[in-house]
Image (tube, rainbow, N blue to C red):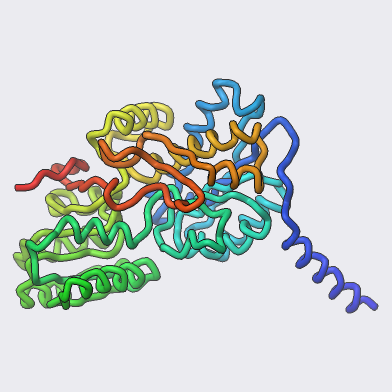
Length: 382
């Protein structure tokens, strides 16, 4: 009997996990936030995403909230682990009874969490870039950033026909491998095969062998597909060996850790970003964000800006539903919401969602950013 009771209890838990959670009728709008709040991605991604969302919610609350309801948020640290993301999402949905979710920030985590949020009709907003995060069957998932395909498209728009000999170097994480396939496909569409094709394990202390092979290949431009501390390791190896060619990366170049660890060696590195540092709305957001949370002069631009604009988009839809979440919120978003806010290139409009567009931006809205004198500046052709 005890065994049968245990099995029935397990079945009941499984059934409950598939029953859509209805939005709360209280005087708050509960928002879950999931991201890497500790670990190597905390400063560049998790904490900045959290604080960008908090700033928007604090501002809306100060104005009276949505239909008299104030935002309340609960933060979960997933350490960029899909398993911890899923555990956190279950806690937020079934115990804390959240109405919506900001995050997870990482694609692998977001892919796993979508299997929990979608059947429970929880609108979630991810910053992840994998294109399959917002497929039609994941209709409750929206993206505050842009797909990897659109970023790669912008990278190819930037290089144009100027270069024929490409070198690619990528890490062996899921991020690096996925980006490697994406960029190789874009180059193949142009009839280009990289003259150098290198990979490395993250936190490799010396990338000299890879850099030597890249130099010997005669590459005219290097495409870097990784994030964080390894950029500095690459730059230092290149300086020792004397490799001096243009560097193009994803917005993984756009982290404070890259500048802190790379120093002057990463001057001139270029990447597309969802933030245009010349945009008035970005400057206004940056200044109040720094003041509110005590951030130093240099910050990682895109995670906080994307999260801030995402909350503003959600607020537009919530105004239409009088604060109701679930299916009503999804439908209100799909009816069309937009904001010319902290993200997107000057003159291209801002972030927007609709029924046929669950991704906030497209390639043409990206700005090209360069690292110069330990700052992120607008790239200008030379």
